[in-house]
Image (cartoon, rainbow, N blue to C red; front, side):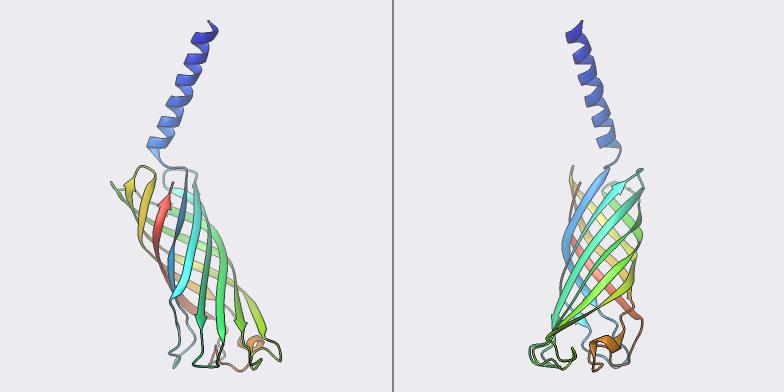
Length: 199
C-alpha cells in the first residue's frame, strides 16, 4: 500500500510539474549587450555610449503578467573633452511586464522605475571640484518592450529590446557643464539591447 501511495504521489507531482512547465515559464533570466544613446541636449554630438550590458529577471504570476527586476551598466571614454576622462552609468529598475505568446514569438512591454547613478573619473580634477571622481544619483525609469524568439525548451533569443530611459541628473554637481552643456535637469535617453533568455 505504501509503495502504491508513493508511486501515486510521484506521478501527481510529475504531472503538476509537466503541466506548469508546458503552460508557461514561471521565471526567466536575460543577459545581453546594451547600447545607450544619452540625451545631453541640443548641439551635443558626443551622446553615443556603445559599451554596455543589461541583465534582467522576471517572475510571471500568470501566462502574460510578471514582475521584472532590471540592471544595466554603460561606460564611455571622453578623451575628446578631457584626456583620461571616463563616465559610467548604472541603474536598477523594477516593475510590471506583459508578455504575449504567438508560437515561437513572444513580444513584451514593461514599465520599470528605479534609480540610476552617473559616475565620472577625471585625472585632471577639472570636473569634480578638486577630486578625481564624482557622482550623481537620479530617479529614472525605462518604458518600452521587445521581442523574444523561442529557440529551445528553456532558451530564447531576445532579438531586440527598445526603451525610453529617463534620468534626472543635475549638471551642477558634476561641474563645468561638459556632460550636460545645456544644464539639463531631465535627460531623455534610449537604450537598445539584445541577448539570450534562459527560463
